Image (cartoon, rainbow, N blue to C red; front, top):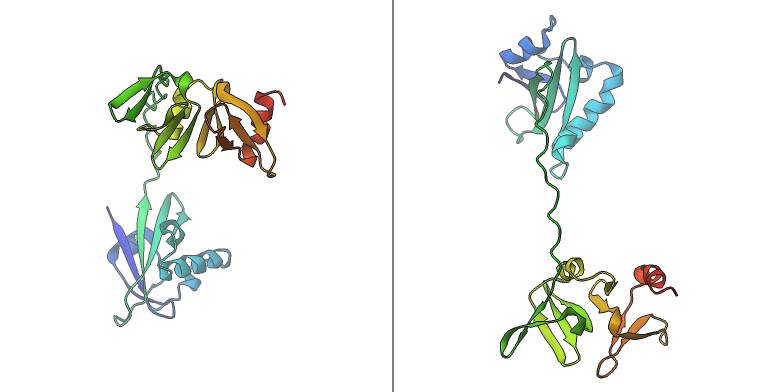
Length: 228
């Protein structure tokens, strides 16, 4: 690939170019000593300033320090980069010529349709006896526990190796609903909605009548689901 190189001093004047620049630009007037602004029409100078400012900013995205210059019959991509001080040049411009031929059509994308989610027939929970498979209907609610979950049943809370998002996707959505970003509720075990402290919560039919919070962003959907 033919790469043009232009070195600029602190005043944005050209101090050095390689042979590829002359081939790309085909300019009759000499470039050495010329101001970079004078080499561009007035309408493009603001864009050039943004390009140079981005080259000096280490936090600037790579695209901000690049620009495309349309020339008759071809396009030049210009990439600006700052140079360490002390070498006589403050900036380097790298020029790449873009082939004017049309790019080949990309191959059609492979069939990336996600595989259908497999419903959970049993919930795997961990007890002192090891992994036990319970019926999803026995889960009163499910609580996020880091990357995993705790399944609350009438017999207690048990560790489950599946994430809350995976359980939400694989459990029956007519029965298990996301009441909160950290909770799935089994509506079969919901016996009331309490607002006594100003916040909505499901009261579950389980020992101790546990309360499961309902986030404000999910209240309207739950109202529709429960015909409230």
